[in-house]
Image: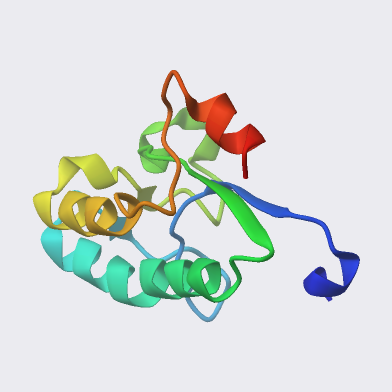
Length: 120
C-alpha cells in the first residue's frame, strides 16, 4: 500500500511501547538494562528492520527520548503511562542506538545538512 502511493514516509515521534493483551502498555523503563534489552529485541529490532528493508520509502525518522510516565498528561493514557523511553540513560541502550544510527545512511544535524538533502 505505502509503496503504491510513491511518496516518502516519515516515521515521526516514534517511541517504544509493548502492549499487554488488554491493549495497555506494559511497564517499560529503558533506564533499566533488563527492560532495555527486551525493548531492543521486541521493538527496536523490528523498527530498524522495517527502516532497513524499505529505504526507497522510509526517508526520515524521529525518536522521542522522553520519560512519558513522569508527565502528568500521560498518567491516564494506556499507551504511555508506563513508559520511560530515555535511551540515553542506559549504556546498553545508548550503545545499541548509536551503533545503528551512526551508520552513514543516517543524516545528522549539521551545517551542511540541507546541502546533503538537496543533493540526494
